[in-house]
Length: 321
Ligand code: AMP
Ligand code: FES
Ligand code: ZN
Ligand code: ZN
Image (tube, rainbow, N blue to C red; front, side):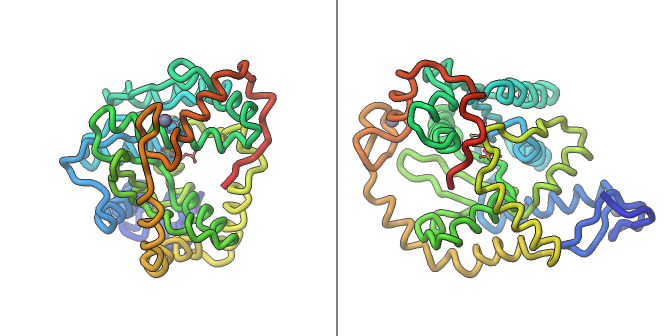
């Protein structure tokens, strides 16, 4: 990760990581300090969390969500975890073990919800039943269960591990299409509204690579493997394109996303407000929706009626954004 002989910018001890966008190297201690500072800065700037909040962290067993849970506990927040068993074959079985072990080792509370066990379907089956890309069914299921579990448990804020790479890639895709409605919704904080909990992304100032390094330094075991159904998706292509730009011009990725938030997002607020005025209650589960039945209940009904489809039959179909 770092050239032999490099020194920490802060204390001059041998460095363990170079961060070209900060034009500096850091030792383990000062790297962790930098990460904490970036998280605190995001929390304060966007008014994400207070120490009185009851926080629910959505944990996938991957590096980002375990790192953000670790950081929030370290910073003194009361945070439980939520793991969703999406039924994506071995990938889901293994990711559950990482999430569970993290919680057990630290004495933290992890809520587990199984799509198959509690709602009668899984993501591969839903993808096949709807004839849409797996990430579409996956996204609908996750968003709905994040909201419903947070509200059910009396949590005031739901945290996800979306990092700078994730947010910049989504912004890149939305910008390529000039999808103004999606651009308007791309905030690191979604305030609580009727039937929706507040949702926040404290890692928006930190990269994927930095989160992997956080986990290594802190001794956190995480699932390295990507979701098998993500192969070939556009999101990964946008990340690769941004990484190439970043390599040639360090700091571009952060400037692209963070300057969007500062300079462009404020001009789009009216568009978001208009879209949320027209919601009513789902006649099956009561969640806010634009039609009679919410997207989750429609999906559960359709996928639940389909015979189970193993993940191998639907891999490589890509993510829709
Ligand atoms: P992804 O959409 O897979 O890029 O994941 C984005 C964020 O969603 C992660 O950082 C987690 O906070 C959350 N997440 C993803 N998968 C799960 C899961 N199976 N259970 C709970 N949270 C998840
Ligand atoms: Fe796994 Fe889309 S279903 S990344
Ligand atoms: Zn140092
Ligand atoms: Zn519903």
